[in-house]
Length: 317
Ligand SMILES: NC(=O)c1ccc[n+]([C@@H]2O[C@H](COP(=O)([O-])OP(=O)(O)OC[C@H]3O[C@@H](n4cnc5c(N)ncnc54)[C@H](OP(=O)(O)O)[C@@H]3O)[C@@H](O)[C@H]2O)c1
Image (tube, rainbow, N blue to C red; front, side, top):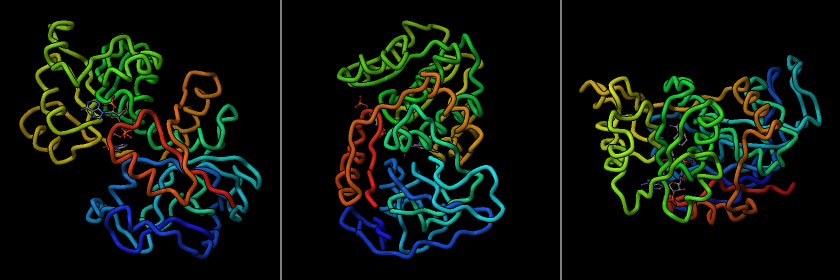
């Protein structure tokens, strides 16, 4: 099968189109013919080797943790899925070796969900990782309640865009940060207010709007943005970061109510997101689609830190 993989860590020039064997299907697994693969910032971070100490790996590494496609074979123990089902998945496996930047992918059936009928393969591939991250952050670690106020940093990005929609549907008041070109977009997703982080200090704006502070702050940026969020939490406020595990640990030891979230595959939660998409309550916005062969271009774009919504690779078999 055709696959975009790396044989060693490094820059975009390490991405190579390889011809690799299709893996065997175990009793509890399914073979997915990949139609589209979502592109996420973690893909270039893996490519560079930034996760080499955190997750086991085996070269060649086929990148890609988001997939949408069609089931071509099911293992003998799989009952909930069958051939020809259109499916999608957040497909992070315990060892980084097989990924969705390929014509085929074998996955444990228990991390695969039937695709929303209202989403194309490209749209579906853009959902699982980012939307599950937002879901697990807001409703797991963040314990977001209806009526609370949430500040979402990077509201125009992949994760932030889903977080805005989920928080709004949950009955929260939503404030997002974004550059001016994305303000209408973020309001369109459901944000009540948007802060231009590029010209304003978000701390000053929040102090003016909410002198007692914010209930939940969602950091999808890291660095100073995480640090500067602490003083604008209210007395019971929670801070969630998806970017800075070490910084969160240090801040926690200093008494800050902060948690780092690392998204886990979860088909049940993805099924809930599918229902929301079918009911028109969850939308995905794709700002760039690339053929598999142009994965390096997609990486160049996502490395800019200024993609609106999501990027997707399409795979022709
Ligand atoms: N821990 C986990 O499980 C997990 C899961 C998913 C993602 N992540 C990480 O979380 C981060 C966000 O992921 P993503 O997929 O949402 O990334 P993304 O889609 O690439 O985010 C791009 C967005 O960030 C915005 N942005 C950039 N700098 C900003 C700033 N200083 N303040 C506010 N907005 C800013 C940009 O908006 P403008 O163009 O308007 O500036 C752009 O829309 C990445 O570092 C990713 O690796 C972690």
